[in-house]
Image 1 (cartoon, one colour):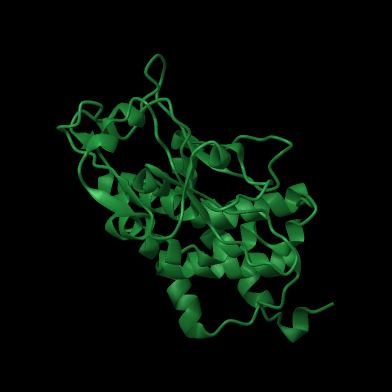
Image 2: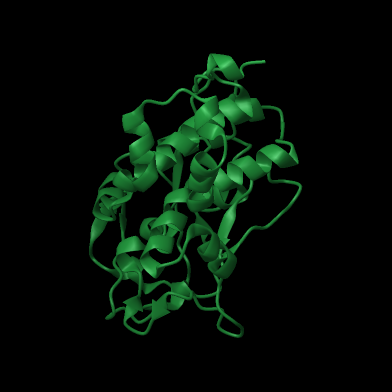
Length: 262
């Protein structure tokens, strides 16, 4: 087992660390006695792609989905907003998309659900060091899936669950949350926090911001890209991450029109 960095979350330290190529056993299907038990009273962090695909799946705008199905906890320890899936009412506190037959939004299930029982943490940013994900294994006592015969590595499990393709859409997001700007505990001011939240999670509002304000008169964009941003969610999300690097950190990822420069 590799030596873990001391600044990693406690959940990483207390669970089995998975090195590249290391195997584990797991299976989940209706025949497992604990089927659906992990779909209640659980903290599920939602990524930008999770919010977008679940909103489209449920026929809601991203704003409506966030209002109806998400929680945005605020603590002093968070340097960026996070979004969590809102569980159902007590006493069960079940996932709103859980059904007796399984996940009702399985094709669009969140990243955390796809990854389970594998967890991942990204170490805090350090100067001159590209953060590498650390993978670990949840070994919950109630989970009988650990006794199933199927054997996996982190790599084969991620591929089977369709994780890499979704993560590819969020490359820019990971670059932002692990940005060197945050070294030493720096945080964003409230205005830039709102920018981050809108661009990452409320994509429909971000589209309104791009097309309903003077945005397109302030930045240089070619006509083809503008048309893609009108209807292509993946293109708009990638553009949102690019714009955030300009808006949050002052990086030259956008070109300001000369007539609007101070």
